[in-house]
Image (cartoon, rainbow, N blue to C red):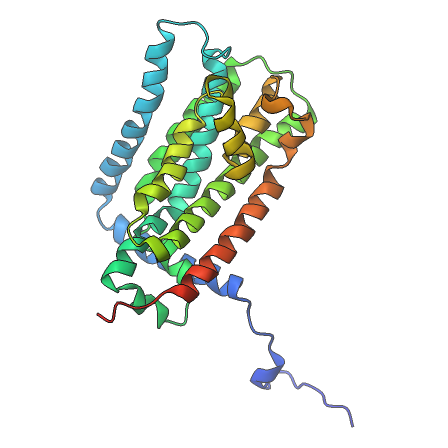
Length: 288
């Protein structure tokens, strides 16, 4: 006789499909972030001041570019609005990644002092706990500053818009954020071994964001190859932005590479995931 399920009857646990680790991680990340947001909003004046400070500090990078263009008309063959386009895209992408994953650079400190052990004994993915640790909403200042510069560039530039270019602009920003986020995770995984390598990680994250604010034409060919084929930061903004701006590609690359950032982001996350799991398995507690 077939079994039926009566409305209101409690089903045995076996019939429920266990939630994936990804869903658990996202849920845990959201709960931890919500906790830090409540803590931040308890001191709203402090939040406003620190956010404005973050906005002002990052704005000095673009002020330096403005001062540069007060003496020149083009830089590496690019005008001020074109460089503002590169700057805004890179700044917004990095700002989003920094907001969501910027706490990953604290992992080395946790490995050294043994506080990572407290995260390992909790029934929550360690990556979610580390990423959400001390979530700093003030980093929205960097995001808003990048968006303002990006908006200025879109207004100032005379772009021959097509459907492909309209779709590519938000795709570029979101994929760039995902690429930077993967670099944050891969850099954190390296700290399982090096323990004191936050500055090495920052050279690829913060340093990479600064690099991408300028056109590839001002850098040596070997460096452009490195950030295209080794650490693919060029897919954050250079390659898709050059397509939108109608510029020639470096290294003689074809036009269709402009649409690869989502695939590159997926590949970066796959590599970062493998590195993270390897680092976590290799971790040995300090015993303290």
